[in-house]
Length: 76
Image 1 (cartoon, helix red, strand yellow):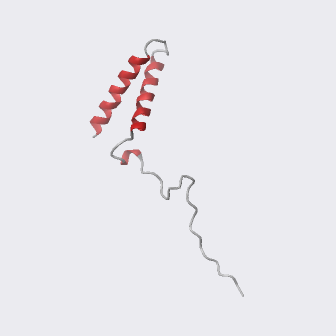
Image 2 (cartoon, rainbow, N blue to C red):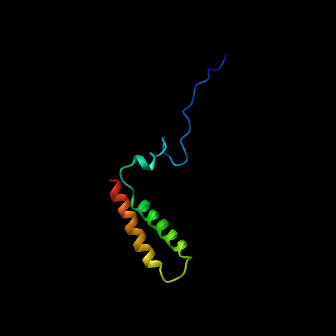
């Protein structure tokens, strides 16, 4: 007797999600973690632009936070 092949469902990705996440541009809101990451990145580039000289870290962060919040508000 011949065996009949049946198709199996494709295995789920390791994350347990069945579909990929929507692109960030398609989402209406960023999570607090994503906003923090944007601020962190902006502050890094501010520090890099001034040669990472010490003593300006807090000012870099404050300016980066203001810039990121302005960008996010303008896109809403």
